[in-house]
Length: 115
Image (cartoon, rainbow, N blue to C red; front, side, top):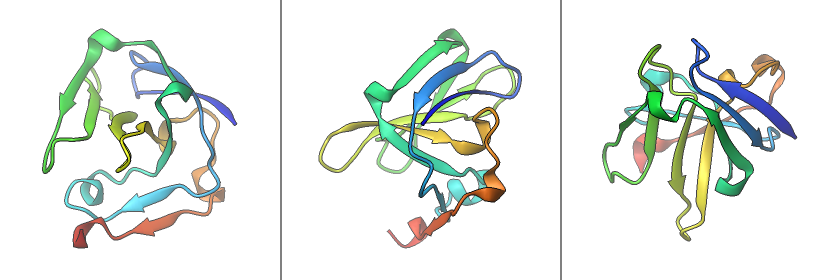
């Protein structure tokens, strides 16, 4: 399905084609504190429409995921990275997609803390 999303203040906006049939939460040191619900899509399905100049990047652990925050409101509405096979992906914070009822989704928990 096609969605629009962005940060809290609206400086960062994007369009994304993403399947919300199996979003995840993760209990790793980062995700456990942030509380995002994530859905993944190939990079070509994600288009940043506004706010590239407002993004601040954070990387940790293996430094392979670009956690991108709005420098105005601090919201991480999406991240960029790659699958183990090298396929470039976007991870969208489902809570930042316009009109999506997160409570109605079947969310899967991932044990990132043990990896």
